[in-house]
Length: 279
Length: 300
Image 1: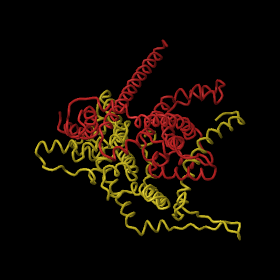
Image 2: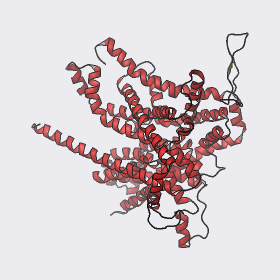
Image 3: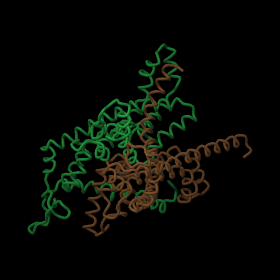
Image 4: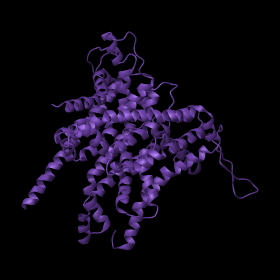
């Protein structure tokens, strides 16, 4: 091994350690029998038991899951339309405005987004009486808006390197637009939709700041609950919750990578077959 | 798109119209309202701000009664200016450390064999997909006075009393680097991966040392990735709320925290709105740079 290579490995290791050491310790201490953070009291699963008995945590988790599923779905539907417009519609009036609005939510500071949406909801309630009060609905609207932006970027990228000749062939064969979209375009961009949906779900499930602004009494999401718990000090059942969430995410990422690799292998095999002409 | 005009034009209008209306209503109009509230006067009312237009009996046009009062307030009170400058400074420093730590990671990934590359990329992405709040919580456990680092150091006899690591600038820097590291690694990796290796060989053949090649060839060629990564970290770091709220000291001023306190603590909505508008004014230049960043097209 050359000196340069060793130096590279060591410096890269710093970053990976920084990413994983805190998480690893969190996982280990979620099985700590002692209530004190600094004392190791032997292995135990009591914090997991406590977590599943804690009604507030379960309620908040259920609210967060509902919000994330609906926002991701709505955001994906709207974001697909927006991504389609961005990559396929060329010039139209207000294009600059559309592009700006469709991508800006990604870089907007969370505090600003939260504040602006809350002021909107309050004004709307004053003027048209809807949405009355704040809660699930207002969080979903807020989350769908930033999900829209992320999905639009992902879908646009996918449509840009998509082979348009397939669509043109379908058109030459007499296909009409909505049919072509649902039969040809949608299946091809499906992977982008899936990753966009998953990204949206994660971002929505993780959001604390925007939800704190636009939520109302009785609608505390999981991050809001964790934040108020953490402000009061470190509590061991949050370790257990963190470990569970990480386990789910790790499983998802590994399965996703495995699935992608399998799809890639199959595609390559099909290509080779087609080349040999025995399809 | 298609040769059948009538129907497809309506279809096209719908495809543009639906997301357009949504974004106008839930993105653009809210900003107009923030702007409006920032020009109004705070008062004890429900909601706690006054009107900026007033109708009177003698004229059918409303009179403008808003003012730049809140902005003057931001300029007068050193608290806000300090908070802005401090946020920008802290975001710059953390972005720099993020870059220094992320570069070797991205370089290593780009130079690995395809199978190792997938695994390493997965390791970078994985924390990004878990809750950032829980990751900050994990870091809190590590740094707190009776946390693991202090316990181990005391047990080893390196220190007598616990080190005060939380509620310091250091904790906030570490928190930002830890949270946003994946956002720096990914664009860096994307440019380094495309780097033509024959250029590196040519440089070596011409007698450049390993470091010389890196400094004169690799680093300049990865410029777009560096720019994209830095903007992706810097922009959210400036407005960050959670990290300074949990890891910084009570007197540490960052603008996201100031806005939050102004709104929820002091219930001064007009000032909070003015803080928000001023924050966006600060971020316009990085926004524009990000939009034009070539490394970001087709990624994120």
